[in-house]
Image 1 (cartoon, rainbow, N blue to C red):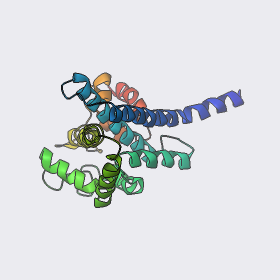
Image 2: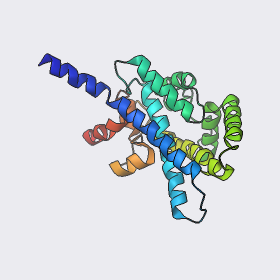
Image 3: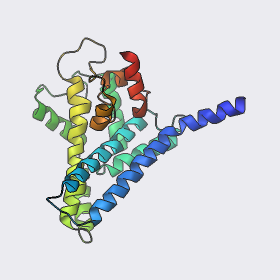
Amino acid sequence: MQQVSSSRTASSSLTGVWIGLAVMLVWSLVLALNLTRPVDWVSPLTWIMVLVQTHLFTGLFITAHDAMHGTVAPGYPRLNHMIGRACTFLFIFNRYQTLLPKHHLHHRHAGTADDPDFHNGNPRFWAWYWDFLREYISWQQILLAAVTFNIAAIWIPQPNLILYWVVPSLLSTLQLFYFGTFLPHMGEHDNVHNARSQPVNHVWAFLTCYFFGYHYEHHDKPGTPWWRLWRTRSASV
């Protein structure tokens, strides 16, 4: 009985690994498909694929975020952080080691002047978004992205690179900011986490930001991986 229990525990602890690997694999396959097929500017499928690629970019970041909380591979810290580093690197060359301490500062000081995700005195959407980008995008990252773009353009048509690599990555930052920072933390709050959650709608919550619209629940139980947040939210209502 103890052996069976241990086996189930190990299997459960690796669920996040398989989900994280699946996100990276699907992101890679969809990107490869989009970069190699002709761009049809009038086809609805083209713009649907832009949105799909955007959502997968967001999935990379959400997986890296879970790794920052140790929930991708609980009990296996090296594997956990390795997956986190891989996901941030694929997200246009972000640095996991830079994001990690800032994210934990966000959790300790959410909605205050010491929160790196919070606005710098101007809570309007675009001003706050600009602060958010400046906090997390470096000139080294932009340089590496530019070099990669120009090298890739030797073999891949530039319209494909712009439409399916550059645009989705930028839209993903907007998605992450709007649903994962702006909506949950804007305005006044009457709780210790300075956060609110969107109304319960699991389909919409997944499509918008992998359940991170259930943001109070995330701050209240940061050890819950993204794919279990819907249960936490359901239990809280």
